Length: 604
Picture 1 (tube, rainbow, N blue to C red):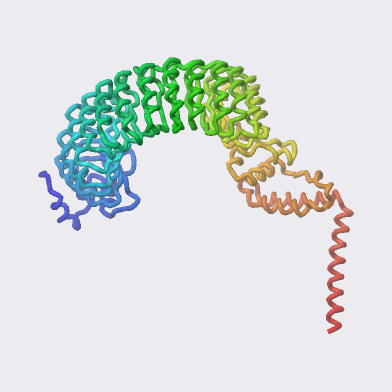
Picture 2 (picture 1 turned 60 degrees about the horizontal axis):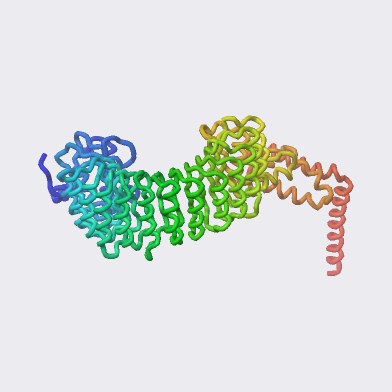
């Protein structure tokens, strides 16, 4: 079939039937929704396998020219992904139709379009809605990089350029960097796992340094081959990016102390406003951490720092803590390093001084009981920490977990999520945790390894969530914890605990009511007798309020009515003379009222 112009489809659009130009009902439905400008149909992908709604799988019988026409005239379509380049002569017609679109905001390309790249120029030139351009998961050769660079020259509204796992390399980045000279409005650049090394960083750094007031806010260069010299050149360009708030360099194992010292000059520059810094999995160690610390002390804007997997030890952590005291750090990732008592004591000092830290990640740090106790000393005075990860610190035992109770019970505690995966503390540790959480009203999520927690440990958690000793004890139980998640299958959690956690997901008042209904089928009202009959109306009102929660405890209306009658009967049985006197008193009032009314009527 010959390649058709947009006008060809425009002239025939009123009479065409979807089933005549598509291979199946799914594709026909996509064209119909595009034609009708369905406001709920905003995403479409040209794919080789049907996986999601909006996947247009090209088969024999599909006319891509019609797809391009309907995409071109759509006013609702926001996202288009081309993940398959079909062997279809109408693909050029599709791209011509696409060039008429003005609504697409995000364009993703997951295959090499070859010479077809040039046919995308009208879309980029005429669509001022386009914000995101993504190239993911295919090998971008030098010629392809040049084609992409040429396309960028057609666009001026683009805000985000994204490359992921496509072997762009240094030469490819050099081509893209040249095109970026004319794109100062771009705010987000992502080159994730794209095989970029020293020369690519030199090219990008030189371009950024020469740009006038670039809008760049995010630069992501994770998992490449960047070394110290490349980073040094890149920093010269980043100093010129006064709007930069997020820098990700994790997974660049060639970065050492020298590169981090260069990075420190960025932190100390007058216009640096970094808020998020990701340096996980570099070759940092103590020396690198110390080299970077001087710069961090000047970076008051920093609120998220990831230094996981960096072989940092006590001295490096101490130097970092001395710098971070001056930052408004909110999220601190230090997993998979190695800290002893000395380092953890300094970290505790930071927690005493900061009022902004909300998340602390310390997974795999060889922390033992003594180290945890030092950390708790600082945490007890921290009024902002909401998330704490201590997973896979296998030297922590019941002794260390017991020390956490000081933190749980402190007035400053606002911890909501606690990770303890990979710590096989057994029943003793479970009892220590449950006892420590008595009275805590902040923790909602507890993540543990349950492989060696047996009946006694689970019983402690059950008592924490719902102490059935008395109605009052049930009322004072923990109504905040909504998840105790064992590592592995949820089925490891005993059914009674699952039920109590479900109750805790209700509003606080409803939680207590449901637990009392569930655990006390025959409510003991005798403790209320000291107030005589004054509490009877309150009990009756409470039971009426509880009626609306019967569905949560699977109790029938008939059974509940027996509860109500039983409670009233217990009051009458426990205080028969007061009940009789109360009844007689009400009758006498009624008689006196009627007598007064008769006398009044007689005087008329």
